[in-house]
Length: 430
Image (tube, one colour):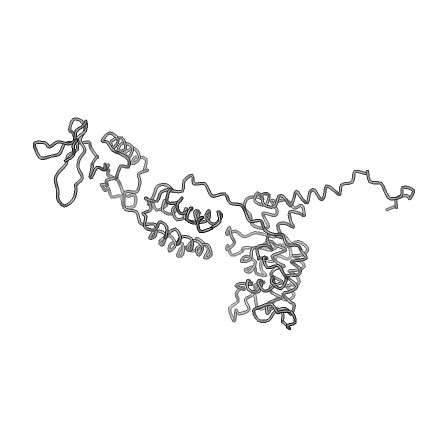
């Protein structure tokens, strides 16, 4: 028997202090006991078991309308007065509809699986590539906290995951993306009323230094395009010196594809799905993302520039008449569908051209850089490449190019101070 408790005449244990707790002796399980005030009267709605206080509330199920009685554990309450204060707060929250979930929440692992299943079945909710990325990342989260129930996930669990990923050498950008995907899962848990707030609230992302892409020269890119049609390849490798090679099987298509990326700034997947119906010869425009599969699920218009127009006319003259696609699949059979990938061919071509670090996204970087250095306003460039921020990101990433270009142009200003080589000769007449 505890030192601060004494037996009563009816066999109950009555602890010392202003408030009393009724107890009974049971061998099977400790029961819930009513909490008494200092006058030994039961406090309505308050119970205690094994030293932990509970608030008993009647709540209405929002889906069925049925009222049910639930006991809510009162975290941090160590005295009847503290428990009573928390009970009053819960009653106020019940009136406002802000009660926590009063049913057993699922474990993160099970809920994450249901999250993926939902979006796999929901039509056009998420792209397949996005789901694949989320599935991979959620696997890491499940390994870390899959056994925890959703309402038990705390800030400390998130921080320990971040620390573990950094210990494995993952970049700050990768870890930030992991947290974003975790947040997506937990937002759905809020939508389904499993939790009331995100455990990532006020969690600042790790400082990430953006990767600075190399700006390839036009000479290097022309070389990359040229090697696609040169006899430099044997099977799946670049020919060695002295070996007689052949051009790439799809060399013309690869070079056409690269040129289109250079002159439109389109992303790789977007460009492969462009149809000839998306080319508006009258208005001199091309539509990118007609199928809603672009990164932001919106289509956009890219106005012709002289090189884009010449390239499209050249491609149109060589187009396969039986296909609607700019880049039809070579193995399409009777079904007309676009090409799936040029990635393997690009790897061979860039090795032969001596620029092994070049990727398809560098074409987009080249287009935006050339537009900035040509003095085109950022808002117009953003509209061409599908940015939704009105050019803010372009200004942050590419603003230095605009400044360098402006400095070069400033050196060409002539205020009339430059003298001709021979002042005795009259200026030529126009």
